Length: 206
Image 1 (tube, helix red, strand yellow):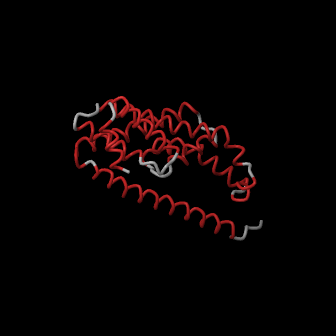
Image 2: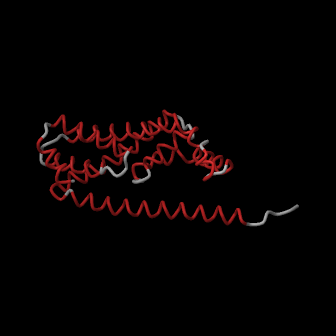
Image 3: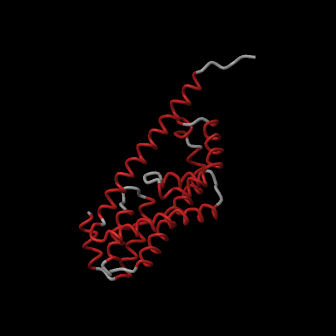
């Protein structure tokens, strides 16, 4: 896969390469298995050898990331209520749980948007839920841009500095992603167990 992408970039003109980078960043937010970060670092390597321009790579990947995040937000905004009111959703989550989740997301959701680029594997979920619970679109857009701008600056700078050893960055990202996913799953399991234990405790009588 990576060899194919590398070969592709070496054959196309810079403008087409920027379009591929932007599209990759966009799709990564909608189809998580797509290696958008890896392609971004590869773009940084092409900057180091003079094939591409730093700002071209940075702007195209940042715009792609923000548009991808906002696209999922709009989907959540448009279809969220019908999904949350569906029979399947009501079987999994009670009305009380949904209200608590909505309150929690209203309080901490903007912080999660600001950190979304650093939470690989959960970006699509975060963007959908921001739409589900109707967070303010201009804050969503602004914070998504801030997150993508910082993350892409770090990735591209690292890929540029390492040059031909750019794959070291992707290896570090892969390990980082595994840790993030494990921690996320662990937190989900913890809250599920905690909620079940709280529900099983006898209620105090006056």
